[in-house]
Length: 306
Ligand SMILES: Cc1cc2nc3c(=O)[nH]c(=O)nc-3n(C[C@H](O)[C@H](O)[C@H](O)COP(=O)(O)O)c2cc1C
Ligand code: SF4
Ligand code: SF4
Image 1 (cartoon, rainbow, N blue to C red):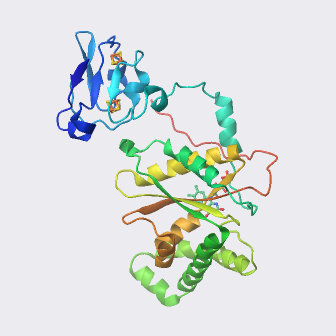
Image 2 (image 1 turned 180 degrees about the horizontal axis):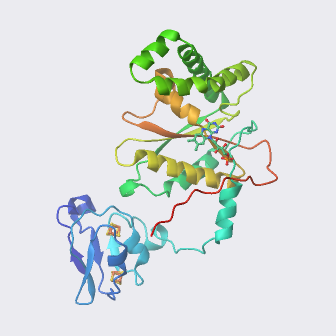
Image 3 (image 1 turned 135 degrees about the vertical axis):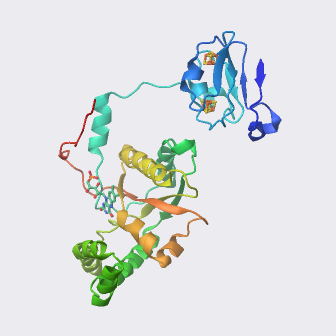
């Protein structure tokens, strides 16, 4: 066994063990060198050694690639290699992936059937395996479960929309917005005012076109800098793509995100952990309607250089 301490970071390993050990069974194939994003491996005398001391970020790629299971990583193998690193299964075909992506729909009318805790956990499990900047894996989830709780948030969103409507109709606020150089932003918001008015009007008639009668919200947030927006939203997309496999639908609710940003009351109700910022909101539930067809989309705008 070749025990290699990673200088400066072996304190992160457990029980002062070396973080990574390379077994004598190493065949020097170079694959760990090729996949490690942190330049941690090199080959000496036809065996892998650790020669660079960038902090390992626990991506697990070296263990997942080694053809002879010659790497032991003390932060990553918590149970057994078989459990923590199960073999890669058969890939879906391009057509299957495209079909899954094309079949995902934003659901605008959920039934009142409650999503089970087990299914919520399964959805969050989909987010768990999303990529994250520097493999931070810090994305966190707050689940609002129960129509009563969801409606409480919705009521407060409607209050916010009413307040915004008042502000957008105010000549004085418009004047000061122009003075502050925010005239364009204000004019754009005014052009979209009809949407807020429509949401207010319909909710007052008991029609929920804001959260779509959902009884479950999955709110995705994170507590540190790096790539928080991307991390949360990629996790959200994983969840949206996987939801139909459980008979569920998911809809990204930008209105709730904006409401969280603009309403202290809504932030208070949602109550994220200290220092966390909300970056993605999903309404979850059982779709009332079944789509018969896929939908068209404009051609992608692509520029190829070189
Ligand atoms: C950033 C973002 C914000 C969105 N906000 C809302 C929203 O507040 N309410 C809603 O019903 N749909 C919302 N959507 C869903 C889009 O409107 C939807 O993707 C679009 O209508 C296309 O339909 P599809 O998702 O079924 O392909 C949002 C999507 C994104 C990416
Ligand atoms: S991938 Fe495994 S066998 Fe190949 S060089 Fe690295 S430790 Fe050795
Ligand atoms: S876990 Fe990732 S970063 Fe760490 S040594 Fe292995 S490949 Fe490199």
